[in-house]
Each structure stands twice: as structure tokens, then as C-alpha cells.
Image (cartoon, rainbow, N blue to C red):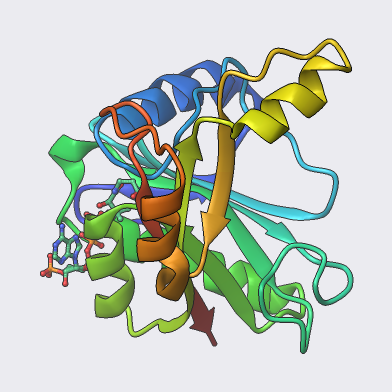
Length: 203
Ligand SMILES: CC(C)(COP(=O)(O)OP(=O)(O)OC[C@H]1O[C@@H](n2cnc3c(N)ncnc32)[C@H](O)[C@@H]1OP(=O)(O)O)[C@@H](O)C(=O)NCCC(=O)NCCS
């Protein structure tokens, strides 16, 4: 699929290194991921793997894994869909329609594979604006956070030889104030708590 200044095409194995570099740049300029990868992710189920190229460089990516049965990956459990694991565009190439082109081409491929929706989840506010602009339906929202273990948890795991440094959890927004008050949340800028919103792209 060719546009005036960029192209969307299938990911190829020889893209692996460029893919990881682009992913890393997108990851450090957004709040979409907590953890870094050192290898390009691989998937057990069927996939739609797309990249966007501009000026001879890989500037965007979209990885969708397809469910064989409902509920394997997606929040929606009424019919099998796709789950978007990796999606991003380099900051200097944003707002040129590349994200839209990736999502639309992804939908065409997923529809061809017999599924009628893809879920996109993100902790990044710019991504929320994008998903809303694309007309996607909000599915669910929750907080993701890191916190210090309570003395009871610390002791229970110490008995098994595990020294717990921190725990990772999620909660619904209506429990957030209570949880913030009751637990020792880690609020430094590397792992600050984030609201995560899931969107459903139906086609
Ligand atoms: C989300 C993301 C992929 C969008 O890519 P993009 O190429 O900039 O998107 P497009 O140019 O196709 O945007 C289409 C429309 O979405 C809306 N939109 C996109 N980014 C927006 C923003 N930051 N604020 C408000 N609206 C936005 C606009 O309506 C835009 O149309 P317009 O530019 O004509 O106004 C990009 O912002 C990104 O890589 N973010 C960081 C990674 C991330 O959060 N990934 C998703 C979770 S895994």
C-alpha cells in the first residue's frame, strides 16, 4: 500500500534489527510500555505483521496476533479477534497518517483472516486520542502500578527464599483511591502508575 511519502508493507525477517531500533525509539518517547525488549517478539498464533517505511527507513510498525478461540488474548470473549501487541510510529513521523494507514491495512488483513475486530490497549494519552479519532470503542480501563510488598507478603515469600523488592498489580479505577491509600506505591518516573485503556477496532 503506497502513500505520497510512506509505504506500508509486510514485515520481513531481515527487518528484525531495524524493527527493534524503531521500537526502542518509540518506546522511550511514549508511555505505552513498561519493559524493554532485546529481541523482536515472536508469536505462537497466526499474525499480521506490518511495517511503514519512509525516506528509506522503517518508521512505524504494527504487530497483531490472531485468536483461534475467543478469550485467548482479547478482553472481548464473544468472538475471536486480533490483539495488537506492538504499534507505534517514530515521533518525527507522527501526524502524517502513518498510524491510520497501519491500522487500516491491519484491519484489511485481519478481516481477510476471518476476524472482525482488533483490540488496542495503551497507557499513552496520545494513543488514546488517536484511537478515539479512529472511531474505536472503549472496552475497559484499569490502573497498572508497582508497589512495595506488605510485611505479610514479604514474610511468606522470604520463607521460600525469595526476597521481594516490589510487586506489580492492576485495579479498576473505582478501587484506585483506596489502593493508593492502603499500599506503598512506587511513584518514581520510571515505573509510575498509569491508567491503561482498551479500545476495540470493529470492521
Ligand atoms: C499512536 C500513534 C501510533 C499514532 O500514529 P500517527 O502516525 O501519529 O497517527 P496519524 O497521523 O495516522 O493520526 C490520525 C489521527 O489521529 C489523531 N491523533 C493522532 N495523534 C494524536 C495526538 N497526539 N493528539 C491528538 N490527536 C491525535 C488525529 O485526529 C490524527 O489526524 P490529524 O493528524 O489529521 O489530526 C503514535 O502517536 C505513536 O507511536 N505513539 C507512541 C506509541 C504508542 O502509544 N502506541 C500505541 C500503544 S501500543
